Length: 264
Image 1 (spheres, one colour):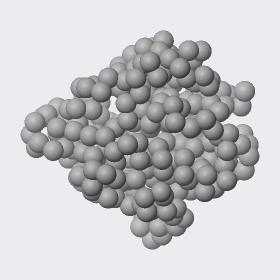
Image 2: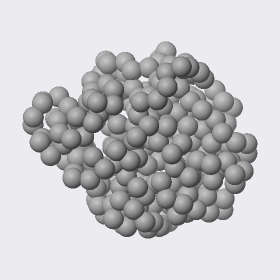
Image 3: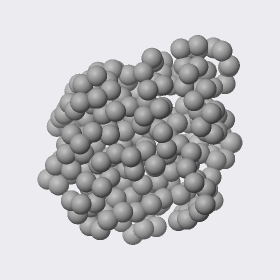
Image 4: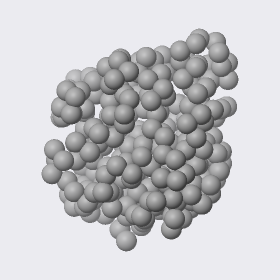
C-alpha cells in the first residue's frame, strides 16, 4: 500500500489535462460517451490504463510511441468514469463488465479486428476478463499484477472500495484518496469501479488459449507475485523490468518487452 502514492504521482500524473476538446468521442452501447485516441497505422493494439488514471498515462510512457514506430495502430481510451469520458454514477453503468463492452464496441466502431491488448495494473485485470469475452483478441500483455484479482474478495479491491465509501476506514490508503480528490477524480466513480471490478477466476484463466506476456517491475510487489499469474495462464511467460509499480511501465525495457512480444 505504501507505494500507491508514488504510483499516483508518477504513473498517473496526467489525470487532469486540458479540457479544450472532448473529441473524438464514441457513443457506447448504453449511450455513455467514451473518449479515445488513435496513433499509427498497422495491426491494432488497445492500451488499457490503471486505477485513478486515464489514457494520458500511456502518453507519458515510451511503449505508446514504440508500438506506433513498430507498425501498430495504437488505440487508447479513457475508460468510462475517467478522463474525458462520461462519468455516470449509477451502479448499472458499471456492473456486468460494462468497461469491457465499451472496449469491444469501440473496436467494432473503428472496424478493427484481430487486435492485441496491453493492460497495466487495473488495466491488466480488465485484460484478463476481456480474454474471456472477445475472440478477436490475438495476444495480450498484463503488467503489474498477480493472480490475486481472481479472488472476488481480494483485500485490495475491498479495501479501496471501503476507503472510498467509508471515510477514515483505511488510513493506509488516505494518501491515495487525497490525491484522487486533489486531481479532480470522481470518487463516486472510483468506488463503483472497485465495487464492480471484473473477476476472472483461476478456472477461466486456465482456459485462455492466446499468448500472454506478464510484465512486472523488479521492485513492484503492490499487487502480489506475478509468477502466480503466469502459473495460472497456460503458456504465458514473465518478463521482469526495472522499476516499482508506478515506474515499470514508463521504462524503455517495458516498451521493448511489449513490442518484441506483440511482433511475434
